[in-house]
Image (cartoon, rainbow, N blue to C red; front, side, top):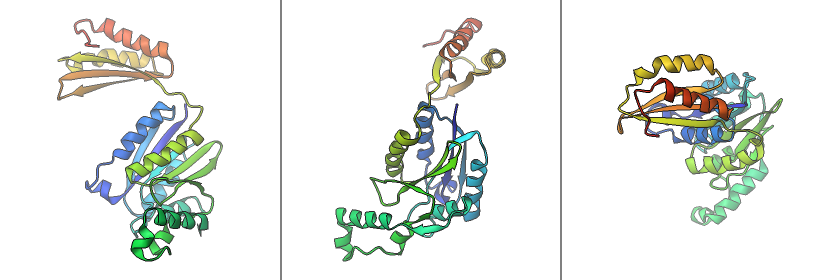
Length: 257
């Protein structure tokens, strides 16, 4: 199964000012379409750290899709475009089509009238300086375009803005164009009430050996006092067999569902 990685960029994430909802949303969508996330990395607005994270994930052949989220805006702390150029050894070039699209958007949003000009300022032009090999992915919700890079052998890297509604808008296009052909894992759950998690240790450990292709985890819900056991894998019969085995081997507790 092809796998993905997520690189989150932003001091605001590392310092606790902003909750990273993008990774949670993106991981759920990627799991559903059959490109589950293998790893996530969060780095600050430091060029060398962004470059290193991109190069590390690009060097892993088991990662088929890389998503770099954040740092595409007009201010000096937005450094992802520059870091992508360095990481992929591609010079930055001014994209006139991107600049023109920004000017069109300024008219649509009445920004040109408020500013008294449709000319791009330094911040706008910064968002149109892109790595030479980038394919544009239109940002229908904002100015900074999403980018796609062909890493060869069927692998791709994407850059998306950190603003959640812009990221989601761009991702919808990515899913259609670059994530076809995947098959999401089958997921099954058992919900127990007031069941101690430790009681399931031996059975879960044995099932991991018997069904290495099935991912099995336990997730206590402190507020509802429920314990969720979740099994997932590519083969529905194997996943169902694990769920049945848990029911049969832990007979002193009856799942709610």
